[in-house]
Image (cartoon, rainbow, N blue to C red; front, side):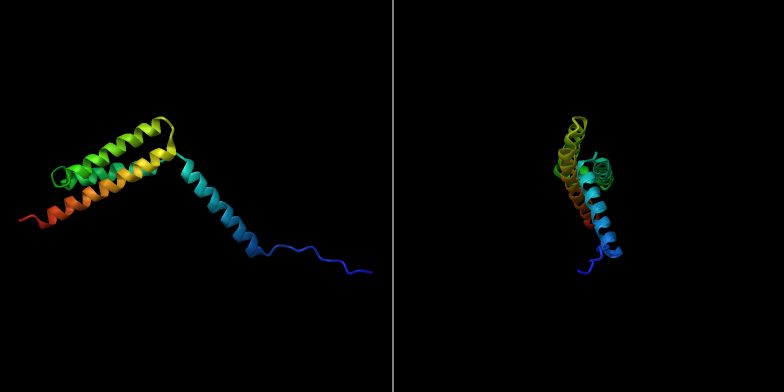
Amino acid sequence: MPARLKPRVPRPRRVAAALALAVAMAGTVAGCAGVPVQALSDTRQTIHAAESAGAEHAAPQQLAAAREGLRRAEDLLKQRDYRSARREAETAHAEAVEALRVAQSAAATAPR
């Protein structure tokens, strides 16, 4: 008589790891597809910080590019093109960060 095989019960660690992976993947997909509220907010705040630091005079081109990118991102958001809006907001944010960096550098090296 053949021996009966026991059904294999998954180990708790494997189940937990598989569950964690599934949750992480779902979060990643949802983060890409959702409304890019945080990206737009970060961009607005960085533009405001750059303006406060004097980017109007120290980095006008970068600041203008950041503002224009934010405007395009908001337009894309109105069209519900969330992926493109996020991409545009991230590009605008990078421009705003550069404008802020240049303005802070100019302020630090300015004669007092």
